[in-house]
Image (cartoon, rainbow, N blue to C red; front, side, top):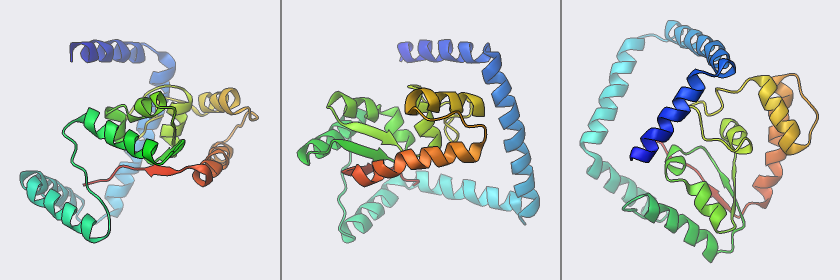
Length: 206
């Protein structure tokens, strides 16, 4: 824990003193803030909906065992399997062993903060299995060999120009000036990965 705290403090200090990151964050924050204002203005009973959402979350956490058992029953009834892992290591081992048993060499991943927290990509790579992130932000930080910068916007710290330079370096493609071309290139790169992958992994909101 002390090591993680030290790493966080060092990373936070570096980010706070980086003028490029701060400029990127300021511009994106202003956009997110205005989008939230616009959404609230267009949504009747905005405050009531927020209160309802908080109440649902609190109720679920207060009755977590009940709802986990409900999920288990419904998944099994639908033909699925449930594995309750005691910790991150057990969860990673389960996924890795499942992939190895089936001879999986390529895994595509939807967005999952849990898999990030348990360093699942690293474990897969240790076993010679290639994980590929398919969420655009996660894909960008994976190419950059970084960790997500924000829970809902993993690549929020990178400007369009930085992403374009990253694509040139990692994907050997032309320099693109607009977001549409960058997203199209990412989509084209990932399309074949979807075809070739033997396993898919995604998170689930509960």
